[in-house]
Amino acid sequence: MDIERQKSAPVYEALERFRKQRVVPFDVPGHKRGRGNPELVKLLGEQCVSLDVNSMKPLDNLCHPVSVIYEAEQLAADAFGAAHAYFMVGGTTSAVQSMILTACKAGDKIILPRNVHKSVINALVLCGAVPVYVNPDVDNHIGIALGMETSQVEKALNDNPDAVAVFVNNPTYYGICSDLRAIVKLAHDRGMLVLVDEAHGTHLYFHEKLPVSAMEAGADMAAVSMHKSGGSLTQSSLLLANHTVNTRYIQQIINLTQTTSASYLLMSSLDISRRNLALRGHDSFEKVSSMAEYAREEINSIGGYYAYGKDIVNGSSIFDYDVTKLSVYTRDMGLTGIEVYDLLRDEYDIQIEFGDIGNILAYISIGDRIQDIERLVGALEDIKRLYSRTSSKLHNAEYIAPIVAATPQEAFYADKELLPIRETAGRICSEFVMCYPPGIPILAPGEQITEEIIDYILYAKDKGCSMQGMEDPEISKLNVLK
Image (cartoon, rainbow, N blue to C red):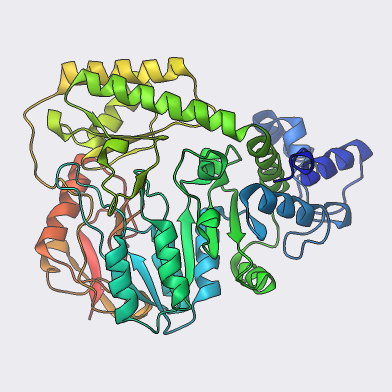
C-alpha cells in the first residue's frame, strides 16, 4: 500500500472544487442544491444537500468511470490489496449479487453454505444458477451455524466437478471464519472461482492479528461493507476483484442492476473512509479489538451470559474468530436474544445490532467509546437481575438444515398457492421467510417445509423477531408450489 497516495481522496476533492465554483444548476436533482426543499436542508444541512449532485464531466460517472471515481477506486484497490475495486451504492447486497452474476449463468452450479444472506439466494433467483449447499455444523450450546469445514468443501467439489464457483462467508455475522486459504486452494486447483461475502469483514484488511481477508487469501472477488465496520455512509460498499477475473466484464455486470444516478454523498463517504482506514485503520482496529475483549470479560463475569470469542476456535468448523464481534449467548438465563435486544432498547436506550432466538450482537467499531461499553455491560447486568428466569432450550438453534427440492429460480417463479402455515408441512416453499437481521433465510424458495421449521417460524414470530420475505405479513399463510 502506497501511504503517500492514500492521503488523497479524489471524489471528495472534486466535490470541494465543484462546491466553490457556485455553478448554476439546470440539471437534476430537482431540489437545486436544497433551494426547492427547505425542510430537507433543515434536516441534512446546507453543505450536505449542496453536494447531492448529478454526474457531470468534472465529477466523472460511476457507470463508466474514467477520472476522479476511477482514481478513487484504484486507491481503494491499493488499500485493500485488490487488483480493482468498484464503488457500490446499492449496499453490499448489490456487490454480492454482482459477484454471483459475474461468475454464474443459468444452470451453473455454485457451492455455498446455506447460512448465507438473502442477497445470495436472491441472486440465484435472478440468474438461475443451481445451489449446492455445504450444510454447516451447528454449535449445540449457543445454537449458531459454524463455518464450512475444508473436508466438506472438498467433498462438494469432488461430487460437483462441473461447479463454477465456491461462495464463502468471511466472517459470519457472529464472527465465525472458515479456513479461507485452504478453500481457495481447493477451488483454484479445480478451475473454480472463489467469491467471498465480507459484509462484516472490512476491518480484516487493516490488522495482522485479525482473521485473513479474502484478497490476502487469494479469493477472486469479495463484497465488503464499508458502511458497517469501515465508517462510510449506510448503503455504500465495495466490490473487490483480483487479477484472475475480467474487470471490464464485472463493470458490465454491475451496470445491469446498479443505478445510473449514483449518490455523490455515498461515493465521497467511501473515498474519505478508505483514506481514514488506510492511514489510521491499524490503530483504530487495535482499539476496537481491545474494547471488544474487555466487554467480553466484563459480560462473562456477570454470569448467565456467554460472550464467546477465540475460546470457541476448533481449527475446522471454527477455523478462526473475529474478536471485534461482541456476540453474546443469552439463553442460559432464560431470555432469548430478541428479548434482551428489546429490553436494551426500550428500557435502557441502547440500540444493538440484532437479537435472534439465542444470541445478541453488539457491533463495536471505530466510533465507539469505552464509556459506551461500560453502559452496555451495566444494562446487561441489570437485565439479568431483573428479568432472568428458568432456562428453556426450546428452539435454541438459529439454523435448520434445509431439504432442497427445486432451484430458487424455479420455485420463485412457479405457480403457487397461499395456504395456512400449519397446512404446509411437506410442501415446497416458493418464497423467503427470515428473521431480519441477520437476514439468513429460515426458508428459501425451493425448500421443503417441515413441522420443525413451522414451529421455529411461529416461535420466532411470538418472541418478537422481525420477520421478512413473505407475501403474508402476518405469517399465518405461506406460498407453496401447486
